[in-house]
Length: 230
Image (cartoon, rainbow, N blue to C red; front, side):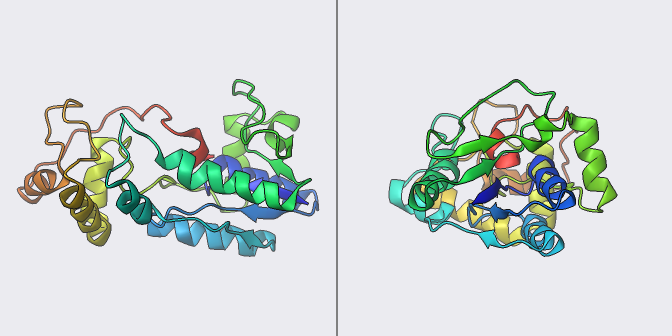
């Protein structure tokens, strides 16, 4: 069985499209957090329909359930979210099916990395095999009208930029208020208190945003979690 490690990012989307163009058989393997932005959920379903392949979703706890389990939030000091929500359920699924070939969206212009999920699968890197870098990957997604232009990590990811926190407050009040509840429940914050001059707590950030303050745009963030953005 051949599966694409699919996060909905441009690289895994391009991987699925490349295999689709070649007429290869494959499935899409998606590990949800339960805290996805609406645009990502729509994109996941759209790509699966476009390539005509089944979407495999391994069972796991949601981000909220893990927060309740630990009574803590993922942040820059304890980033358990990627391991528990993305990596562990994928490995568990690979162990169950055995003999799967996992197609990972690493490009030809990235440093070589092997065996992202341990010795539980045979790995392929179709973009790298095709010599595709960032430009070619973006072009492939654009050619099919499936270039994702949104974040693929959690709505309350602690690694997002301040301008992205502002966009979350502006566009998705329900997800924002859920994040505030989690911070109040645990007594912790997603953002680091020493990260910048803005408040760390989402409730305090909301007050500033409601007052009309808008953070300056910053350079694109360093890739904090490659697994969440493939």
